[in-house]
Amino acid sequence: MQFFGGSEISPSPPTPAATGAGNNAHMIYLFNRNGVCLLYREWNRPLHTLNPQQDHKLMFGLLFSLKSLAAKMDPTSADKGNLGVPQLPGQGCSFHSFRTNTYKLSFMETPSGIKFILVTNPRTGDLRETLKYIYNLYVEYVAKNPLYSPGTPIR
Amino acid sequence: MPPAAPRSGEAIFSSVDRVNAELFTLTYGAIVRQLLNDLEEVEEVNKQLDQMGYNIGIRLIDEFLAKSNVSRCVDFKETAEMIAKVGFKMFLGVTASVTKWDADGSCCSIVLEENPLVDFVELPDTCQGLYYCNILSGVIRGALEMVAMKTEVTWIRDMLRGDDAYELQVKLLSQLPEEYPYKDDE
Image: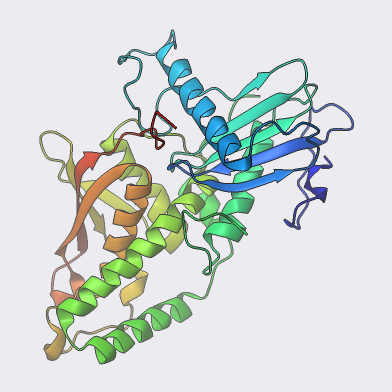
C-alpha cells in the first residue's frame, strides 16, 4: 500500500492480503474520546468545503452518531437502551466502514476512546488489520513519547 | 476477515522487548530513594509515586490494548481478570490472581505472589509508612480511567511490612459513559 508515503511515520506497513491494486488513501483522521482531533493528514482531497475546525467537528459528530445508531439497531444484542443514551466506548457493536460511490471510510475505535478514520478509494478491501497496525504505530511513537502530552494534537 | 483473538500474556511477554530485571528493580529503587531525599515526608512520596503511576497508566493502556488485542470487557470482573492475567504478565512477567469479590462485583483484590519491583529491598525504620509499590496502584488507576472506569486502588498487604504477599484492593467507583463533547448549538 502506498499511503504512508506522505506522512512522517517511517516504517512501512505490511501489505494486507485482500486489497485492490493501486490504493491511495485520501485522508486520515485520529480523534481522542473528547473530540480533539489528534491527527489529520490528507494526500488526495480535491474539494474542501469546510474550514478545518468545522470539518473535524463534523467528522467526529458523524461517527459518534453512527456508532450510537449502529449499536441501538443491533438485532443480536440483548440490552437496548434508549436512543441518545451515551454508551461506554467500545461497548456494543461498532460499525467499521461505509462506502459511497466516490470513497470508502474505515473506522476503528479502541476501548480507550481513540478513533482511527481512514478515507480511501471505494475499491479498498477490509482495512481493519491496517487500522490495527496504525494503532500499534500510534502506541509506539505517540503513547511512548515522553514529550507528548495526552489530549493534544500530534505534531 | 474476522477480528483476531486476544493474545495471552505469555505470548506477548515473549514478543516484546525486555530490559534486564535487575536494572529495572535498581532503577525503581533509585527513583524511590531520590524521592525520599527530595520530599522527606513519607506521605508526600506515596502521593508522588501514585501520580507518577497515573501518568504512566494513561499511556500504558493504549499499549496494552494494542498488543493484547482484547475487545471491550463486559463487566468489572472480566476487567480485573484481564489486569491480573494479561496485564501483569505482559509488563512485569508475573501472574497475579483475583480474589475476594464482594457481593455486587465492584470490589476485588489482586494478589501478587512475587513482585519484581521489591527484589533486594528492605524498609528502614524511618520509612515505615511508605508504600514502596505505590506506583502500581497509580498505574492501574490511570489505565482504568482511560477506559471509562473510575476506581480507587489501595494496598491491603505488603510484603515489605511483614505480610506474606502483595494484595491490592481495586474498587470500582463509577463508570463514565461517553458524552458528546460539543455543544449542540455550534
